[in-house]
Length: 466
Image (tube, rainbow, N blue to C red):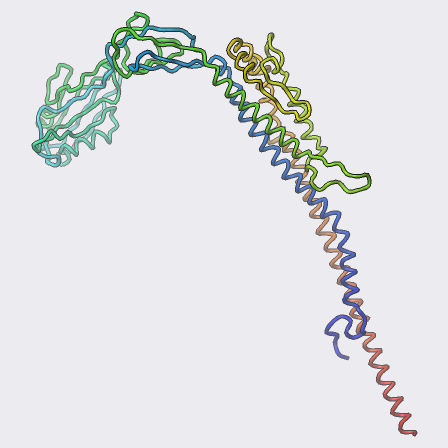
C-alpha cells in the first residue's frame, strides 16, 4: 500500500485544515498565560523606572541635606593681592588685611657654569645629601661618576622625589648652570647640600646655611608676613587657614596699605539646592503618575492598554503616601511647614510649587530655622533627613522595591514554566491528532482502493457474461 505524502490526499478529506483548526484551538489556552507574562514583564520594567526615579530624587535630597548650605558665606576683597574661601560656619564681617611679604621657596643655583649638559663633572661615584628644615629627614641620592653631568645630576635629583626639583638654565654663550628649587615655601624649608665621594662635585654644588659652597641662593626662602586687623601673622605658606576661623586666605601679592576683606551671608547655594530638590520631587511625582495612569472605560469592556503598569500597586502607593507625609517632618520649633517659606503642594498633582520671592526672603531673614526644618538634627528630624533614611531603606537590597521586584521575577519564572508545560501538552495533543488523522487517511485510502478493485472486477465479470 502506498504511503500518504500529504494529509488528506488518501481520503480526499480536508484533514490538514481540520488539524490546523484544532491546533489553533489548543493554542488558545496559552493566551491567558502569555497575557500574564506581558503584564508582569511590564511591571518588572516599571519597578526599574520607579527605582531610577527614586535614585535621582535621592541625589537631590542628599545635596540639600547639608547644614552648612544655610550658613554659607561669600567673600569679596578690596585688593587683588589676596582672596579668601570660607567654610559654611564662617562668621560674616569685615577684616583689615595688609600683606608685606609673600612666602617664597628657596632656589639654589651653581656659581660656576658648565660648557655643556653631557660632560661628567665627577671622577668618582658620590652621594648627594639634601637636608631641609621643618623636621624633614635627609634624602641621599647616588650619583655615579659616569652620570655626573648636569643632565645626569638633574635627572637623579628629580627621580629621587626629595622635596626639591632640579633644572638646567642656559645662561647664554654656550654656558649652563644647575638650579635646585624647594617644593615648599617658607624659611623652614631652606635646604643644605653636601656631597661625599668626589671633591670636584662637592665644590661644584655643595651649600650650607652660611652660604658656603659651590651654589648660591638665587631665591631666598621666606615666610609670608601680613597683618589681620593689625595683628602680625607669619606663615610658611601663602595659603593661610589658621589666621581666621573657617576662613582661608590666599595671598598672591603684597598690598599697598590696609585693604578690606568682607565676609557676607550667601543664601544662593541653599536656594539652588532647594530648587533642585523641588524639581527632582516633581519629576518623581511625574513618574508616579505615569506608572499609575488610569483611563476610564465603559462598564463591561476591557481595561485600556495604556494604563500604568503599577496601577493599584501597593509598593508604589506606600512610597508615594509616606513621601507626602514626610513633607511635614520638621525639626524646627518656629517653622512647621514648607508653605511658610513659599513651597506649596498642588493637591491635584502632588507636585510642589515655589514662590521664589517668599523663599528668598525667608532664606535671608531666617536661615537657621529653615535649616532646622529641612535638615533637622541630621539623624532623626528634618524633612531631608527623614526622607534620606527612608530612601536608603526603600532602595536597599532588602528594601520594598527589591522585594516587589523579586516577587514579580518569581511569578514570571512560574509563568514561563506553566507556558512551557502547556505548550508541550499542546504539541503532544496535536501530534496525536496528526497520527490519528494519518491512520484515518490510510484506512480510507485503502478502502477506496478495495472499492475500486471490486468495482472493476464486477464490471469485468458482467461484460464477459454478456
